[in-house]
Image (cartoon, rainbow, N blue to C red; front, side, top):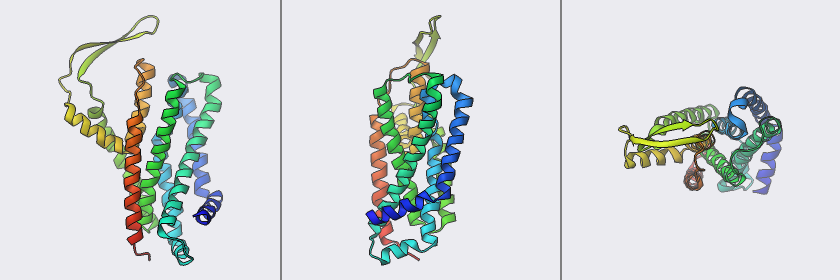
Length: 278
């Protein structure tokens, strides 16, 4: 495993796709600071990259791992004695590492530029640490999905297209499920006084409330998708800051990520071990 990781990280240092994504990430950070900085505060800006990081992981994994298929590198690794499980896990670790680096670069840049201008976090630091754990597991889930797709689909073009389509499908599905997953049983009237104190009062039942069963099903489907988790975390923080709502415990999202990533990797390793390499 050490030799596989050492060789993989050596390739990574010279990989143009990786460095290109880093440059794009920095450009996005600048764009977010300029466009959204004044109105959103540092908290939401730090979370903005969660929406696009899945796309970056998809592109990187498809091209980085797919190139090993095209060059016959995976077959050569097996010839010299590396097991399929080690090959699978080493590529997964590299993909996760790249995702963490991308997110770290974005958040560090936004923090360095944004903190002096926008001030500190509006949410408690303990909550922000929990969110960082959620972000880590979202990256692990994204990497697990696209590493599995790429290693089971030996064609670079095909794995890239599948990855991009899957990301789009998850975004559309999340948008379709969000209303039901976040539906409230009651209608509220929100008012703000001259001191900025927000009051939220119940004014009656919401006739469009889908019911508890439909809401739980929508939440389950939404939360097993990393895109759904990313958007839900951003929504929770936004509501907490703008509407002065209580912090939402996101521990359940961690379990969704752990479960999704575990199932995908177990299935991926199994099918990759049975796959006939060309």
